[in-house]
Image (cartoon, rainbow, N blue to C red; front, side, top):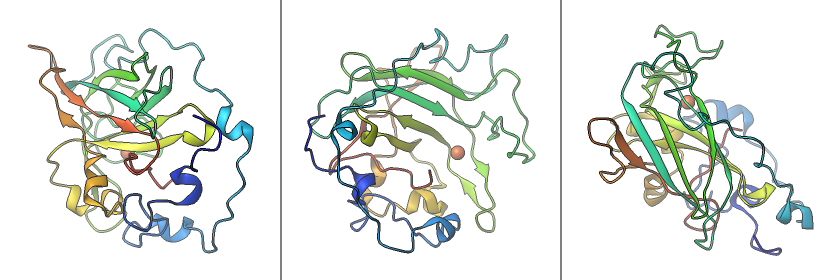
Length: 242
Ligand SMILES: [Fe+2]
């Protein structure tokens, strides 16, 4: 990223007014009532280090970090899937060597986390966490299990659509993006205040992966494609709880 570029969505709140990014306060999404800032944000001036570093993401990545189905002695239960796509900056250039981390529920909709105690089974062969670096064309690829929907107590009968959480470090600290990837055609979209807090329809589409026959491997796994744009008008919406 060049020094002096336009500031990022997260820094300025750009896109929050026209629905391309979720607002800080979205009353249907109950937790935002507590955490939304009540005073105008103070935008700090950008410094050279904001735009050029620090360079995260070059730590050693394990051989199986990008395959969530092979991190234990047995195979996890559920539908094996391949998730792949490209990471681009605001000018459409590939983000090379960028760290992508993912975390997700298992096929039954349960996280391996002590705070998730809803009555769905844990899977001893699935931790639900993975990471990889993008290649020279900005591509990434994970093999995992399709996550299940899960209840989350935000309101009466509240269920999250199936999703995978992603954290990306772009070329600089301020281009970090945390978002959620959804699956096409999920009937829970219209009932989910987190998804609906992004009001712009095109921006909503940017959070939904597409089924991809080219990525799909015969007799083995369905493929989903999810391209990610870190900045600019076409940016992938940023999750607003951090
Ligand atoms: Fe989640």
